[in-house]
Amino acid sequence: MQARVRAEPQTPNWQARHAVRSGVEGTVNEFAHGHGMRRCRDRGQPKAHG
Image (cartoon, rainbow, N blue to C red; front, side, top):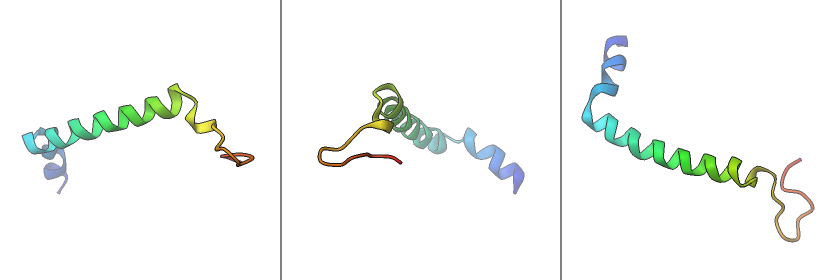
């Protein structure tokens, strides 16, 4: 089991899926942290966190 889990990231299919996910995660992270979207207010709402 452990050997299969360790070998899986070496497969082209896994690498292709991970590349897509990595790009999406980076975009979301940059939006949330780089533009302060974790602490934004919605119109008409007193707070978006709390």
